[in-house]
Length: 122
Image (cartoon, rainbow, N blue to C red; front, side):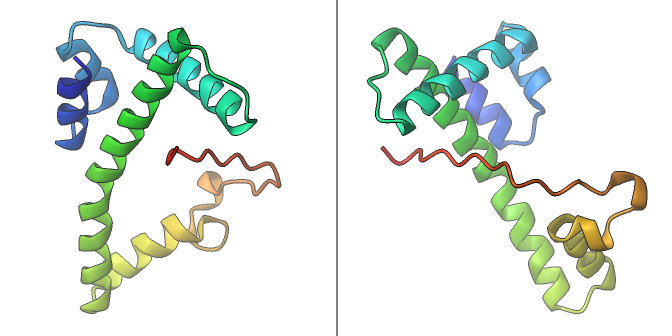
């Protein structure tokens, strides 16, 4: 199930539809993801993650990896287009990378000091 889910996500299928194609609901996927985040926080804090929760941590790692593998070629293609002189590609990159300066006023993200970083290499 996880292998198929990740394959669908890597191919560009949105999470909601990938979950449904794998036979479970998007809300289940979100619950598993939240449990994985909680387990990741425990792991980051140096506390032992019970085996019953480790499976959700592994689920989250696989999900994030699949999404990164999906996004990487898109980002590289956009970067190459910008380097080749595509003004549209440059503007897209600026809107994504520096939304507070180049994003639309209604869609600009508020910057916060709260930042959570999870180390998935362990």
